[in-house]
Length: 243
Image (tube, rainbow, N blue to C red; front, top):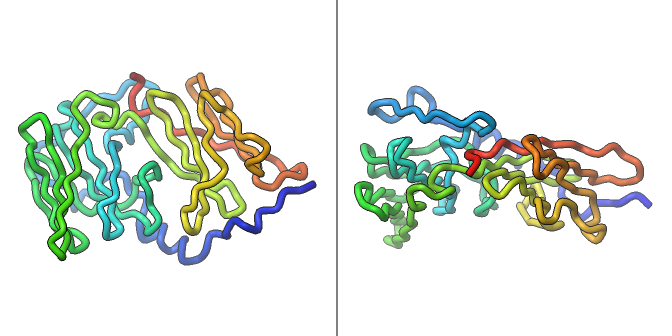
């Protein structure tokens, strides 16, 4: 019996417009790049070059996420402020439009009615301080130098798999992982697939499994329709670092 997915909302025109507004920009445009000497980091073969901009992503309000990094090879503590959608949650993809970058040379900025300050950049415990227009201040600790988050080891991407559903795929030191959410309101459902649990149970209501979970090129196989419809195959991103 074919599976129906009436409960999954279809991606609306508003969502499409939002995606266009965010823009899948992984780096600062040349005109907006911060001043200072260029720093390059050599990548290991088999890793994703986008890992240079990956890190620990936290929601800071105002339609923004801060991607926190702390890699001495790339200049030390950094906070990349990016535009995200209204339903964004930690774990979602975040490689969208860059609004600001804070580092050892540019430690303050204002975005979305918030004052941003990168503190402790020369110490062992740097933080991002966010103060709202109402005077509420929150502090976010940057990952400790040398850790996976600090180096951008886990790379995340999103892909539409039909029936108004997005798959959020990540790959890092612990291997590939994917979860599923409504393309409209971001509600997560169905469960998670990874090395330990490579396939969703039948009770999830749709097919999802990881093929090649222990190999160099894992893929996510999904089928949202059933009834003999062909499955969709989506490659995982390469990890940002191998260990």
